[in-house]
Amino acid sequence: MAPHSRIILVRHAQAEHNVTFDWSIPDAPLTPIGKTQATALAPLIPHLQREVDLIATSPLTRTVQTTLRAFAPAINRLGGPSKIVLVPEAQEVNAVPCDTGRSRSQLQHDPDFAELDLEPLTEGWNSKSGFWAPDEGVVAQRAAWVRRWLRGRKEGTIVLVAHGDILRRIVARPAGVSGGPGWKNAEVRVYRFDPGYVEGEECFLDEKGVVAAAGGWDVTSTEAEVLASEGKL
Image (cartoon, rainbow, N blue to C red; front, side, top):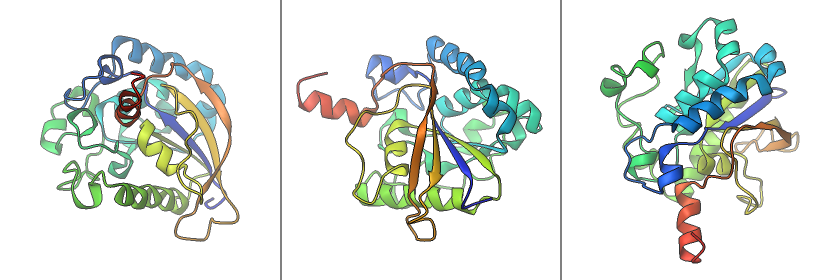
């Protein structure tokens, strides 16, 4: 279907670092409230549960936990968790423990990852260096890679669960990253490829609307840094 696919982008539900502002929490998981938010999102999007053809997610714990709960009906319909596609390129931006994923050997022993295909997690995917570095130019390239990956898929409706900072880059426009409001926890937005750019390397997306949000405004690590510098945190 690409470049005519419908792209459903979702931010994860509330995670521990969103509440404590403690960026040292390794691969921060969802809070109990976050798990409730993710579960509550599922019945808010019944049409997507019926229509989605592919479910993909960042391999960090909070996004996987959100995916398994928020899209449980669709996951069951599509054949179970093994059909979820892990996209390490959609991991969060900063080189802090809460935004850094774990190695395949660690994830193999985590019940949340037990049925997932870990093959996409190649050596160094969580190194935060090279292609995975938090440098703004590198992150922009990674976000463009994600858009091209979405464009290259054959499915008609694709869900990608990711993080506030990388989502800002994925939905960037030709003029750059929007300085407007960020993403709520467990927020769902719909996009299509912009016809004017779909054939190019950047293949920008065009927002079609917010479908639902089960959580509130919990800041990302980058947003927290900005607020702290302005004395607003």
